[in-house]
Length: 80
Image 1 (tube, rainbow, N blue to C red):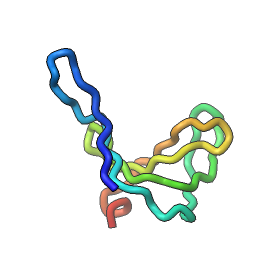
Image 2: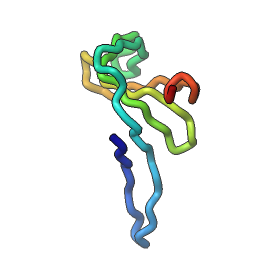
Image 3: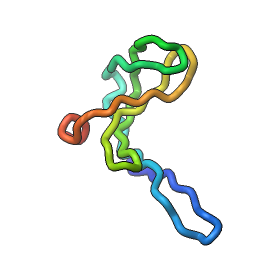
Image 4: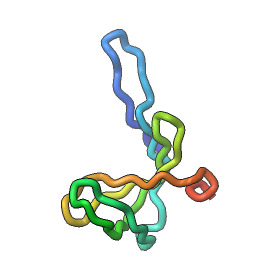
C-alpha cells in the first residue's frame, strides 16, 4: 500500500508533505510519548512514514486522546 499525502499551492505545484509507506503488523506494539497526554502510551496499528525532511518515522494514534504520535527511527529499523 502506497499513499502520498500532498497539498497543492495556488500555482498548481505539489509539495510532498509526508508519504505513508505501509502498515506494520497490527499486533506490533511500540511505546511512544504523547505530547497532549504527557505520558508514554502503548500504540498498535503503526504505519511507516517518511517525513518531509527525509527522516523515517513510525506513526500511530494515542489510545486515550486519538492524537497522532510519531517516533523517529533509523531507515534500517523501519524499512527492513
